[in-house]
Length: 122
Image (tube, rainbow, N blue to C red; front, top):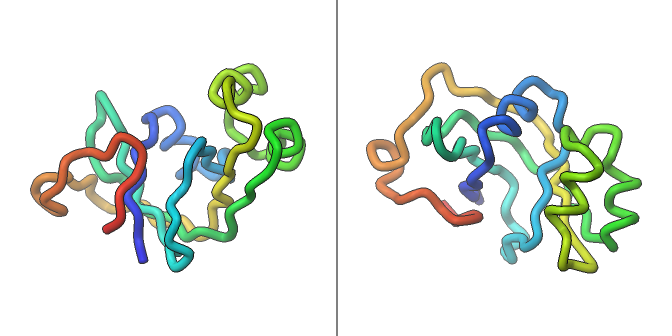
């Protein structure tokens, strides 16, 4: 099963360059059969760029989550802790195999959906 995730363009670049090996989330999809993330680069790009397989999902206390993922987080420690500001626990999706599409796709033309606030099942 696939999910569509909205990700900021700066982070999308880091995912597809291999610099960012974890995508952080405050909430996560509940269906255990999700194995692929389709990446929507949010404003100003507003296109589907590619996808990646889910290696695993780490759920942990925020401090421990940072320690486990910081080397390949693709973000600063300050940004990480601001993102999880009011949370005790968080999620890190470990990025597996990456596939960048030859041409970025429009959500409306190719998927007939609007951009998700966080994620949506496809």
